[in-house]
Each structure stands twice: as C-alpha cells, then as structure tokens.
Length: 385
Image (cartoon, rainbow, N blue to C red):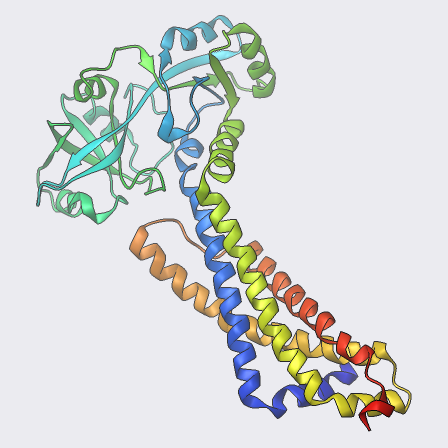
C-alpha cells in the first residue's frame, strides 16, 4: 500500500488550491469537534470537583435532590442514625446553598455557592483547606474565598494576598475573608465560599438548624463501602439516597449528561462537526475522481481492478486526514487556552481526546472516499473514449 502513496500524493498536490481548501475544511471540522468535546468534558469535570474533594466513603442526600445545584434538605438525624453500624467511623453534616455576593468594589451582586460544615473536621481535600484556615472559620462571620472564582466577584484574592482586610456582603450580611482555597468555577457556580456550619446559619438565618443537604460518612479502615452502602439503603428510610463516593460523582455527571440540554448540545455539535467534515472531504474527493475519470478508466482498461482504484482514493483520504489534523489540533490547543483564561473552566487537551479525534478524522475521510469512489464503479472505458 505504501508503494502506491506517490500516485495519491501527486493527484492531491496537482491542484494546490483544492488541497488547501480540503485541509482547511478538515481542520475546521476537527476544531469544531475538539471544542465541543472539550466543553462537554469540562462541564462534567468542573461539576464534580466538589464531589471528588470529599474525604469520605459514603454520601447521603435527599431523595428529591437531582444535582448539586438542586439539593433538597433532610434531617441530620438520618445521618447520625448511620452511627448504629459498627463499620462507621464518623459522620459529617454539610450545608449547601446558593446566594448573592456583592462585589465590594462596584457593588454588583452575583450568585455563588456557599458550603458550610463543622471546622473541627477536615472533610474537603482542597488546596487552602488547612488547619489554620479551618480554625479561622470558628470566628463569627468569617469565610474562605475560592481564589479561582471569576473576576466579577471583585479582586478578593489579590487584595487578601497583599495583606489587606477584605470584607463583602453575602446575603446582606457583612463577612470577612480569612483565607483562600481552590475549587474552581463550574457550570453551576462561578464562585464558591466555605464557612462554618454556625456562620452558614447566620448567613441563611431563615434556615433551620439540622436540615442539611449532604451527609458524609467516613468508614473504618478496611471496610467495604459498597457493602455498607447496601446495608444503609435497607436501614434508612426511603426518603434518603445512599451513594458511595464514586456513585455520587456518577450521579452528578449523569444529571448534566442526560437531564440538561447542555450535554446533548455538545454531543450534537460533535456529530455535526463529523458530518461537515465528511461532506467537505467528499466534495474534494468526488471532484478529484471526476477530473481524473479518463485516467481511471484507462487504468481499468489495462487491467487494474476497482479494489486498486479504491485503495488510491483511500490513500488520498488518509493523507488529507493526517495533514488536516495537524492545524486542527494546534488551533484547538490555542482556543483551549483562550477559553480557559476567559471562563476559568478546566478546558484541557487530553491524550484520549486527541487520539479519539484523530481516529474520527480518519474515519470521516475514509467514509467520504468510499462514497466518492462509487462513481468509478460505473466508469466504462468504452463510454469515456
């Protein structure tokens, strides 16, 4: 097959303008697929970073909860009931809610996620959640601010790192930033705060103590979390969902993938990129076949088979796929960097995505080649000459 590549290459390079258009079309299709897949994966990853940071084995949520942005409350007595099992080491109630943060510079409000828990327990594995910051949370009206929140919240991290006292209004209550942590923006929240359970209830003064959104359970070393989760499902009432940590992550990811339009739109955009690329390559290869129909008919007349001609066209398709892929992935890397800086979302190139799009590109070009070569099946040398 490699010995026949020069014929395919000579045919492609004969019309350099046509070749450039074909490569631009393939690169465009690749960029479209890369961006759609990148946004989709950043959607899934950004919305489960909180879940992944939980330092626990089992998670309890209300049966009515559908995702982190739509958590319903339940009584923490359900959580403490899990202490009846000897495999359970400790339990930790977590409060969650969204509220308004007022930019201390321009006074513009913007919603963010507030997380409240007992600072005596380190239940989040995040940069900045250290003992010093946890001790600071024991003071009244003190919060930790997510340094990777969007700039619309104000220069909070920059001012704090300069040693200045940073205060802002949260739900019309003045709070002081006593530390920074790193969680990151998501499609559900552009910013995040962490505070103690006591301060949380001060901010949300209409909330009833003991009605929590998440119950985190730590098990004793060596205990099978799946076994304990199954036991708790039968032990607790039906108004509670019991997840292992991985199941809780999958629960959130599945919500964004199947219950929202965003996941569908990104997947549809990927399919559209494939279709656009297939059409562009087909038009190029079809024109290539039509322009050289007499030459192909001559080859058939002297004994070359349809299989040989198909091989030549597929070689052209492979060359187009490989060369067109290079500017596509280079442009995607640049656009990922720009989108990451603009949105603070975790949009990164992964090896699996890079390889996957390459395979899709080759398949896209091969599909176009197979369709285009059908014209040769009916090319009769006698009719042409």
